[in-house]
Length: 149
Image 1 (tube, rainbow, N blue to C red):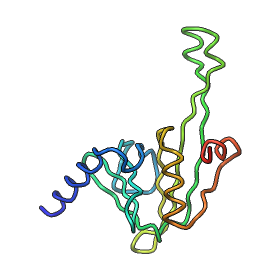
Image 2: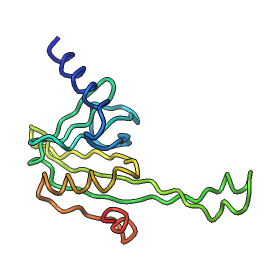
Image 3: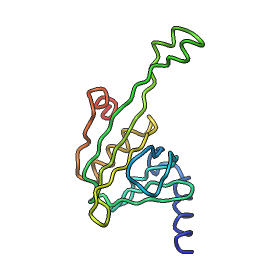
Image 4: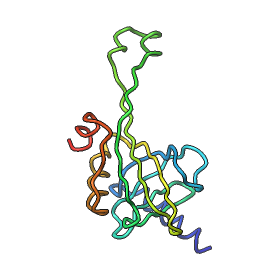
């Protein structure tokens, strides 16, 4: 019952605005998620980051996070261009990925990969740097521009 109350409280908190960034868990070593799941990364906690979904809440202590990496994947909209207009070949779609490396309570290395909403990237990265004391590693110059503004 206690766990249910905790998850319900986290879900309610996630529905309130301004608590973090929208994110999709897309991969990693977590046994908590078997597939892609949407949720919210909450970076306002004093001691830990939380990823909240409708059914689960995962918490990672900031002092256990050892890697913060940000990168972008750029896709050309080829299918749309072929079907609709060749002008869409010029359009790019950027996807924003955050990888967190951390040690679980047993000391084992773990990783979580999230796809962030474009509007939330800078706030989430700045919060993580401030809370963990670690610098974000950018995969390339384009990611550095997007992450720092």
